[in-house]
Length: 117
Image (tube, rainbow, N blue to C red; front, side):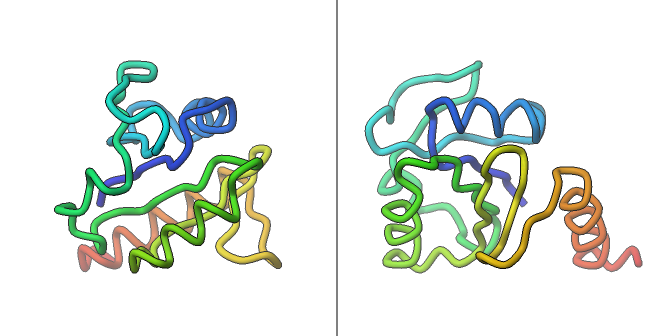
């Protein structure tokens, strides 16, 4: 599974530091596509259409454009996304997990997916 951050601004940089640069495959940002941030390439959503949607976990990391990004993801049938905001991750508006809590859930799901558990 590739972990991706949608938003290459200040919120994206914070997410990168919290999640760990070594875990991020690329950024998505429709305005900064073609660039590189912290050594990681930035693509537009349209540039990644060949990626298997089931193999991507997308973190929405933009408080300013969160609604627009979610709309773009849903319009393009990307359903495997989480919202990153101020050091917390949520899959819906009622959930608020710390990076550590989310990491535990993520690691368990990856192990289960690989049939290790």
